[in-house]
Amino acid sequence: MASLTSAKHITGEIDGIRCTIIESNVPKARMEFLKELMTCNRLEVMVREEARTDETSEPFYTIGVTNLVFNPVYAIYERTLHKPDGTVVTPAWYRQLGGDTEVPYYMYGKTLIVDLYE
Image (cartoon, rainbow, N blue to C red; front, side, top):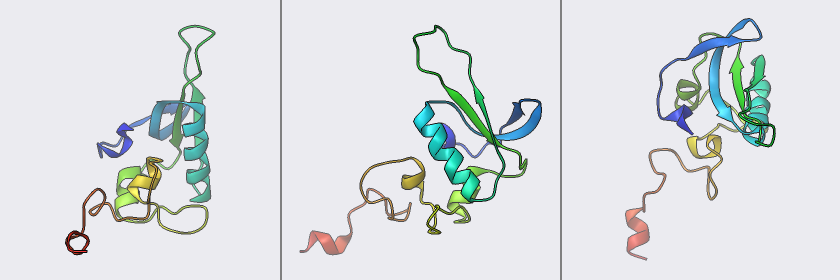
């Protein structure tokens, strides 16, 4: 997912309303995940179905929020974005990675020195 690799603030229009684009060209499952996350953080969500290349292909979506100063990268790393259960969203959880998604981003994928000696 490119949404956390660049902090560039992208705006656009969805149904004639200016929005901060959260992610574009995502499948329906990812769109539903992001829509629920943004809605539970009290953001107004806008969704647009992208034009299909053919009728047999899976539809893709662009999802945005009407808050023009919102930036998902800053919200995640500043720990201001929360899951529906109230806990803080981690980058791993936002990306929907498997495994332990509660590990802080600066420790993700690293082995603790203590573990090496056990």
